[in-house]
Length: 306
Image 1 (cartoon, helix red, strand yellow):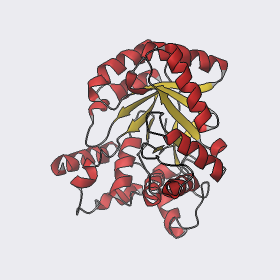
Image 2 (cartoon, rainbow, N blue to C red):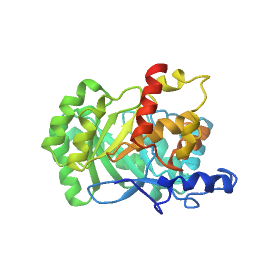
Image 3 (cartoon, helix red, strand yellow):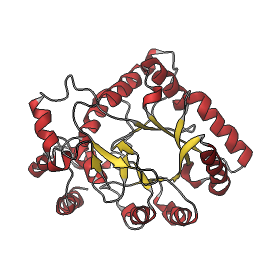
């Protein structure tokens, strides 16, 4: 079940606390209770909004990565912990490894990455490279877009048994792969799946999310803003007044709270490379969450706007 640090925020207490303390300025992780997602396999709780790093590319020694450094700093200061990456994202693993070391945060994050090789030996080499580039432990290893699922999960299950990784999972960002993902979820003892889900694309709610609930699998959610479609749809539209009931101060926070409030153990990982976007995203972990009626109201509203 979804939990808050002190079981306060579902009642909306966090919104009042945030106002009382004058907003985000000066707040560090731990000053206010945050909404958490529980990993069913172990009961471990993780702050309920992570970060995707597909844009974290460039020369790690150059000024071009400075915005990424500040983004990671803000993300961590405001409570974010889960970072999702991939060796397919250019040199993002190398960039992350260096920036997290510079910031002294490498051991304080939940690191998730991926592998996508159909040959087992190549997959092992790929994963070993991720450990080197990221410069520390990897909490979650995922089969990227279901490529090489059987051979990679064989290695990953062995590594998990040896304690080299803690969790294993599979990912997709394509609705066309949902049927295959469902089969994999039934065949293997997964800890996580990663799937596309948003108010612009609710296909995963039909079978993947309910199956995750049934099998005790946590869900990382990619494309939580529908590749920008949601923001384009609400441009010039005011955030509904009732969003304040559960502490959503922006459309972005409202979109993320919609995902977190699903009864499955969902954790959105918006791709974020700018500090002010990270700040807004982290705000989705404060306040309450929409109930089923409010979720439906939001779905109806977005259906009219998209």
